[in-house]
Structure formats: structure tokens, C-alpha cells
Image 1 (cartoon, rainbow, N blue to C red):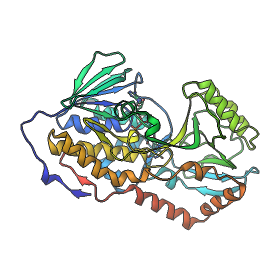
Image 2 (image 1 turned 180 degrees about the horizontal axis):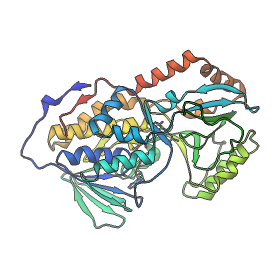
Image 3 (image 1 turned 90 degrees about the vertical axis):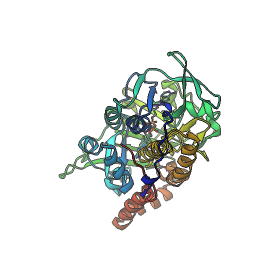
Length: 405
Ligand SMILES: Cc1cc2nc3c(=O)[nH]c(=O)nc-3n(C[C@H](O)[C@H](O)[C@H](O)COP(=O)(O)OP(=O)(O)OC[C@H]3O[C@@H](n4cnc5c(N)ncnc54)[C@H](O)[C@@H]3O)c2cc1C
């Protein structure tokens, strides 16, 4: 990281009053930095509390590690981490074809998204006013401030509004326009469930405490059962013209079932179990944004730079929260200068989310291509190289160091 602290500029201007939408990873991280450095911060989260559970996410490389230490959350994250999980890629006879090692899937430290959100919330609870069970319904930026309307609270005026509300960001939609203009849809889908997994007679724990999950591929479809990334994870290519209603759980289950109809291995039992438990399904998407700020509104985390299952989202969310806060603190309220620098500094790290489609990796279109993919993970040198490349891609040595509490 580059030391930028000497450029700190303090004036007598009052610090901006900031509204953050979303309390998962990016939102609480931003609240922690801004609140602790003198900004008046409100966080509005549409769920009634911090959303528990979800998939495991990871942090990798020097930049992520330095940020976790700088935020003072590293020890709590380390204590709550998941066990390392290797994915054994098997064929229909349950013969191991390749291994995706836990170090590749889980970086330096891996944690359930809900546990991470809870830790970040606890570390920022004193730095911001949290409002649960509400959401922004309208924004009016008149240049001097932003008038915000909520579903339940009375309207309020803020100096700045930050969207940390995920890949389907409401703030992005309200400030920029329809999400279809800002998302690249890949045509692949994923579903995660915390259903019991049918792994009888398979080794699921190694002597060193490492967990084992089992991944099975057929053309255009992939399922991984076990481990903590997501106990049941399904990834698949959507059939031409197929659609479902995102708001209907029944429609989601039908869509998933129809795409795995006729699948082998233990998939029919796994799908039967899915119906009874927590379930989340969405299309794999990437954001398509040139800048992450517009007027007095900014986007942080998946709202601005998402690439579903790309493997860098949580680290990018922390980097974005740090850079945006650092620039706002440095510019002491000159949001236009701070936002311009935030866009400039984040362009490099966020570029990792601009290309790549995890669906193509997980769901090759033929058995031949599945064989080729597996071959690349059958070699221990290639596996070590992939871990190194992932850490390198997550690291940004040029990221400024800000003078902040
Ligand atoms: C299966 C899976 C595996 C993953 N694995 C990894 C991994 O290994 N490594 C990694 O780095 N990342 C991983 N990710 C990605 C990671 O989860 C995200 O990148 C990260 O959570 C982004 O954080 P965020 O705070 O920007 O958004 P989110 O975590 O999506 O949070 C958005 C928050 O905003 C709230 N919200 C939504 N709409 C509104 C609204 N209108 N008003 C108010 N609040 C709202 C939501 O309830 C939520 O709390 C994975 C994702 C999935 C699905």
C-alpha cells in the first residue's frame, strides 16, 4: 500500500451526514470507518436483523489481511472461521477425478457470510445508528443534499447516500436507472441450501480436521455437496428462453428441479432435501459500471463491483469501504473530490470483477470439456499456481494508506 496520510486536510467544515443502505459486509465496514472518524452515520437494512447464515466467503492475500488487522476484526474472524474444505470432483462412480483444494476455495481465512456480517456489525454498532426492517424508496439529489424517502420512516435529508445493498442494489436503481442497464447476465444460475446432504459412506472429514465436499458435473450442470462453502450448491446453465419469478420460492424450486431433471449421482436425493430448508437462488451476474459515484450517491461492494462466485467479493467490499472512507476523511467533507478519488483508486482492484464467468468454469458444455477442466486440477503444481494467482489478483500494493482511527 502507498502511504497517503501526509495529504490529510482538515478544515472547520462539519463532516457530512451519511446514509448507508445495506448491513452485510460493505455497509458495516463503511459505518465503522466513517463513524469512528467523526461522520454522522445511519445504516438502513431491509431485513429485521443482520441476516444470518449463507455461504462461506474468504479473504486472501496481503491487502485483505492488512485491512482486517487495521479494522481490528482479524482475531474475531479467525476465531469464527470455517474448517478448510477440499472439493473432490468425482464421476458418477464416485471416483475422484481432481481436487479443488481448501486453500484455493477458502483463501487465508474463510468464514460464513452471516458470521462475518455479525462481527462487522458488532464492531460498528457504536459508530452508527442502525435501522433494521426498513428501506429507501426514493432519492432526490438536488446538488445541495439528498432527500430520502423510506418505506416506514419519515423522509430525511442527508449529505451523502451510499448503496451497500448488494448486487440487486436499490440505491443503484434509484440513482442510476434500471438494473438491466448495469448488470451483465451470464445465463448461468446458482442455488444454495442448508439442506442435509446425502453423503452416506463417503469420507467427509480428514484426520487433520479438514472437511471434504463432493462435486459432480454433467454438461451444463454442477452440484457440490458438503463442506461449508454452501452445504448444497447447484450451478447450471439456463435453458434457452427459460425464466422464473425471482420473488416466488415455488417458481425457484421448479426452475432448479427442471434444470437437474434426469441427473445422476446423489442429485435427486439432494434436490428432494432442498425443499425443506433455507434456500437462495439467483442468476450469476457481473456489474457493468464505469464509475461508482453519481452526484452525492456512491456504491460500495457488490452494488458497484460484483461478479457472482468470482471469489473476490468480500475482500473488494472491504477495500471499497476503506478507500471511500479514507478519501472522505482526507478531503474533510469535500465529497466531490473524495468521490473522484474513490472512483480512480477503486478502478484497479475492481477490475478483477469485470471479466470472468464462474458458470463457464463450473458447467462446461460437454463431458470432454469437463474432463479437460478436471485435468487442470489433477496436477498439484497447477493447484499451487491457482492459489498463488488468486492471492496475487486479490492484492493491491498501490492502495493508499489513510490516516484514520
Ligand atoms: C455461494 C457464494 C459463495 C461466495 N463465495 C465467496 C468467496 O469465497 N469469497 C468472496 O470474497 N466472496 C464470495 N461471495 C460473494 C460475497 O458474498 C459478496 O461479494 C459479499 O457478500 C458482498 O457484500 P455486500 O455487503 O456488498 O453485499 P451483500 O452481502 O449482498 O449485502 C447486501 C445487504 O443489503 C441488504 N439490502 C438489499 N436490498 C436492500 C434495500 N433495498 N434496502 C436496504 N437494505 C438492502 C441485504 O439484506 C444485505 O444485508 C460468495 C457469494 C456466494 C453467493
